[in-house]
Length: 231
Ligand code: BV8
Image 1 (cartoon, rainbow, N blue to C red):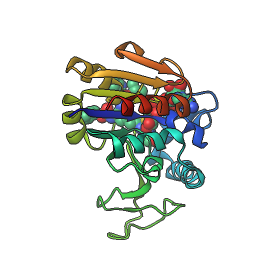
Image 2: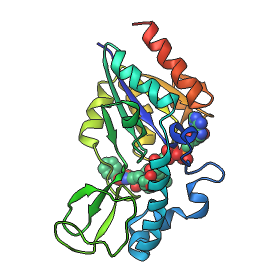
Image 3: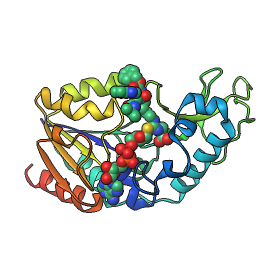
Image 4: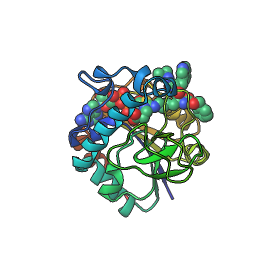
């Protein structure tokens, strides 16, 4: 039975109105990476970081899953094999489209983390540095997302899934952030057929045996239809 691992990045949510990071006018056009995507930046100015994530949480709450998210949910429901989505995205559009088997390796906007006691809970829409942790009461709340220099979530599940994958598909990512950017090469070495579905060739496009370029709402449903046709 075929096992499919799908890696997604900000590009799959672009047509739902959510910003990507590195495209022109992207999320890091206004706020520098070191200020909003590192623990040092959070320590330096937690109010700035909370404002950055509060704005993204509000945007994500207004966004709707698009045809690419829906196609992946259909693949998981109808494909006679395993389908795992490993997403770098912190929005919940995969789940809202119906996908169940999803690992958020860079965390989730919908979750809050206490960096004093490690407690996790559902994030309110707006968070402030002075908010108290509901368990230890420390004013130590942060978005439950993975910043640069922090260990991604789910590695104990992702690595075996990549080793056993028959097909590895990368959707809407520029292939510049590790360890995710190494997944295509890693799974290809272990025998997987690797496919890139992206607006344009990514930084690691040479790692893929097959590629289809265009908006995710075109290339992803087309690819899913082909996968379901040959079952
Ligand atoms: C770690 C926070 C150790 C969440 C983010 C040197 C070599 C190798 C590694 C390193 C190195 N130096 C430092 C590192 C490690 C570092 C790293 O990779 N640095 C890079 C810059 C070199 N990585 C880390 O620190 C990671 N941790 O390595 O820990 C470890 C590792 C393994 C095991 C144990 C320990 C942590 C990385 C997490 C960083 N957090 N953000 C948030 O705010 O969301 S990064 C940020 O970039 C987001 O998380 C995002 O998910 C990620 C990737 O961005 P993309 O999703 O690809 O988005 P981007 O804008 O770049 O591209 C969009 C793409 O979509 C484009 O290709 C575009 O063409 C396409 N597109 C646009 N529109 C559409 C479209 N495609 C289709 N349709 C469309 N309509």
